[in-house]
Amino acid sequence: MFGFDVDKIREDFPILNRKINGKALIYLDNAATSQKPKQVLDAMQKFYEKHNANIHRGVHTLSQESTQMYDDAHKNVGKFINAKHPIQEIIFVRNATEAMNLVAHSLDFNEGDEIISTVMEHHANIVPWQLLRKNKGVVLKFVDIKEDGILDLEDLKSKISKKTRLVTCTHASNVVGTINPIKEIGKIVHEKGALFFVDAAQSMPHVEVDVRKMGADFLAFSGHKMLGPTGSGVLYGKKELLDKMTPFLSGGDMIKEVKLEESTWNDLPWKFEAGTPNIASGIGLSAAVDYIKKIGMKNIRKHEIEITAYALKRFEELKDVEIYGPKDPKKRTGLIAFNMKGIHPHDIGGILDSEYGIAIRSGHHCAQPLTERLGQTSTARASFYIYNTKEEVDVLIDGLKKVQKIFR
Image (cartoon, rainbow, N blue to C red):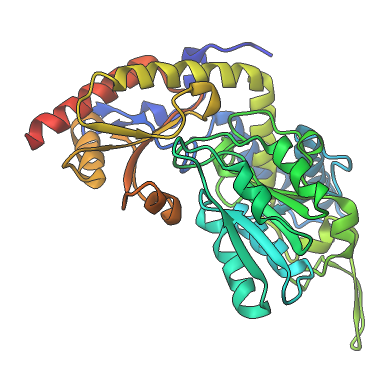
């Protein structure tokens, strides 16, 4: 662990040398996707240049090397989240969305089973369950939030019942930034005999995730939000549950034996990884995990709290601005969703980009029900990560003041 030196960290990210409209890039859209350090890029390039071959198929040297690298990537990710079985319980998918759909299709749901989600979810944790309601007749309920953006646990307790098969919620909101008390939620869920599915796409890059401590039966996250490549993601599932589930996709590599009459499934996790996978992305994700471990999650979290607290303080200088979510930076991840009176978020984002080289997000952030729950149609969102600085926050505030001046 080399501690936390933001200037040194920035040297690892080639894209931060870019200029946008003549201005140094200030990348504040990390909740959508993070940038990639050269260590991740180098790991993927090295694979293609020196080891590229298909896995689990060949006896030749390249295939054996590729297989070992890919299997080791599963193990590395599994240990990172403290899985009991670091390889068998880690299924590589394209993204958290695919992980949600895998569980929705592979877990045996029956008509009348209850699934509970929340109004603060990303669409990926709403739409698959809506389709289950339509196709299998499950009952779908949603837990509300309090006015400060905190999940209402009393509402959860009132909605959960003996018929509840699955409760699923985000660890951290991609709009209001709220970090939910996952361990407490897991206890409530298991006391009712239901399964607990955690969407960790927004928490994995920012806070320590331990699947056993939080009591997760399933957990999903995307690699691209935590310094890894796009096309990489993970579904964690308890081995005893995955053993009983039917494969989501079928074909090559997910089988043990194929006859014309019937087939038998491969061992975990390959049972759920049909066809040739994105081997390089899996290796890149493992390299991202190594990079994060080297910095230290506690150091990442400390930096994030400091820069978020600083940003929230600077936002107080702006008039006619509404910020959503918890006021305490320790209760949220490093993002700030906001609106400026009389100015559309798209206009905010466009001016920041063209005049200051600042990249933020505008829209409903693939969480339209939550945005509407806040009484809005869209918001602007600045989201921070390990390479962002207080100086960049200063430029953001200057840019927002310029936006207000333009629209006056």
